[in-house]
Image (cartoon, rainbow, N blue to C red; front, side, top):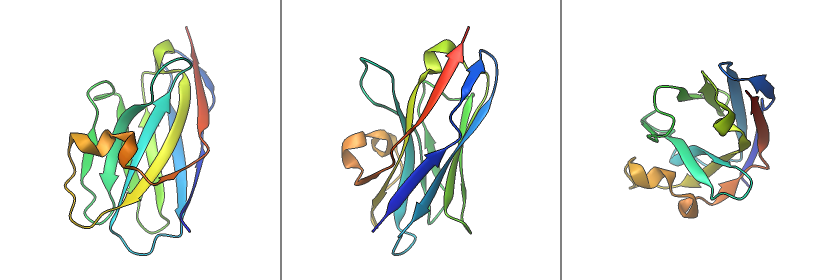
Length: 129
């Protein structure tokens, strides 16, 4: 059974940085996509960035490009989201998600939450002005 556990959420001031982590377990092979999403109160869940474990290929959403970077520690199966120059509008619950797919490509569909099977409980980020 795949399990995802996020950590690293905190309260920071605008302009600060945080690194979120997502520890994964239970992967049967390397044919998994992992991604970061966030959801602010009253808003829809937003896909931020995705990564294909087998190749390391990444896809980044336009809203956070240049500020957020997704990466993966292949040896320990930990997904990271480095967040720089944080803004108050980045305040949200941040989720890690995963799905197994052998013949998928990494593109904008990587950030569609409906495609993901496994979800973590989330970690909260608050950015104050």
